[in-house]
Amino acid sequence: MADSFTVVTSPGAAVPGAVAEPGAVVQRPAPPAPGALPLRTKLAYGLGGSTDIFGHWLYNGLVDPVYNVFLGLSPTQVSITRALTLAVDACSGLLFGWLSDNTRSRWGRRRPYVLFGSIVAGLGLPVLFMARPGWSNAQIFLFMLVSAALYAPLIASYNTPYQSLGAELTPDYNERTSVMSYKGVIQKSAGALIGWALWFANRSMFNDPVTGKPDVARGAMWAAAIAGAWMILSGVINFLFVKERYYGTAAAQARAGFFRMFADAFQCRPYLMLLGTALVYAVPTGLVGTFGFYALNYHVFHGDMARTAELGGWSSMAYLACGLLGIVAANLLARRIGKHATLICTLSIGLVAFGSSWWLYTPNHPLLSIVCTGLNGFSATGLWVVLPAMSADVIDYDELHSSKRREGAYSATFSWVMKVGMMFSMLIAGPLLEATGFDAKLGGAQSAQTILWIRILFAGIPVTALLIALVLIQFYPLSTARMREIRAQLELRRGAV
View 1 (tube, rainbow, N blue to C red):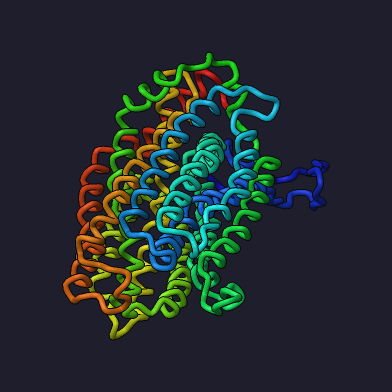
View 2: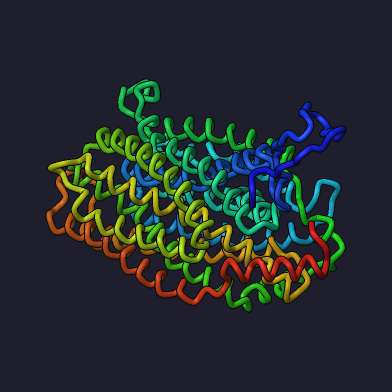
């Protein structure tokens, strides 16, 4: 589409807002393409992505150093808690997806949940780290288990309606990628801050006033409190400045039953291809978060938590910088070669990134691990820009066949499948770590065999999973041309929105 159009004036012709001599050529901006969104809307929606990142990943980024290394729970106890939390989160996501699809209010279907969820999740985040080192092992484990399980529905009440809202912001094929790019930039920035959370939690200002030793749990609680305040602010901004484009269409449709809604979603073939790809990606994502910390702390730095925390912070900056490049690349590629081909490219780069950890995580050159993190940032960011944009396309495909807008059902089932995959990975991460012979009491004196197995698991599991994902995505049928046909058919039937 051209960026401007030309007006040629004739003697006596008037061009509103412009002064021109007769016969002069006047350049005017072209009208926005149907489905184009104002910058304010993209920024406001993208800002809400930071609530998703802080609400889910700050806890996951700090749980091992706080609850395993500092408070002394076993890796299996930590894995059980993470798996239970993901199970509750996944089920809660289904509930809030169904509720938001069937809600009718003066504020829309999604926005009331976005506002409520951001407030309660922001207030609840610091509570997750209130366990104290003087408690018994059983008390710490019980507190961790209960607090995490109670927090999961709070963040789910925000996240599923928020993801659903993103899928209905625009009907334009390329604009959907643009929206997810703005979201991706802000999410990567939030993720980079999480990379510094362990460094922040180890500051001397949080030391135990009696012993003078670091109190990582207290530092983590304050990091979570700051993140929680930001979550509340971003949720309020999202509520105020993002509107629901399809609410008029959706409000006229009949409310759907809980089980029927999700059963229909699982019968959509293009959607199943995306779900399968997301699932096999979710398993290594969960495991890498665990084994990456142990590979860096015990293989590269021989148990030196302070050096691990500092390099982790710099790695997060590399993740951010390369992630921003990944967003730009994904956006450009999606417009030139389509989303399907772009997703294949990002998965292939992820394959290289995970495999390179075998050579780049080395005690001889610790800084090389930053290169591995950067490659992961480039790949993961591109993937999480393209996948949600493709999911929005699937919802149009579903509307063509069902005459219903069911963003909540698709966002909830997508989230559910992802969390089931991550739950599986969290559930096996602790036992796998213990199977390597790891013992936190040994500190940096882990056996050579233990270190070897941590490295094998860190590289081998995600490489295998990504190879499977590359095979699955070959069967995805919605091309750029097909999506243009679908949009034309929908607008012919129910008009443009």
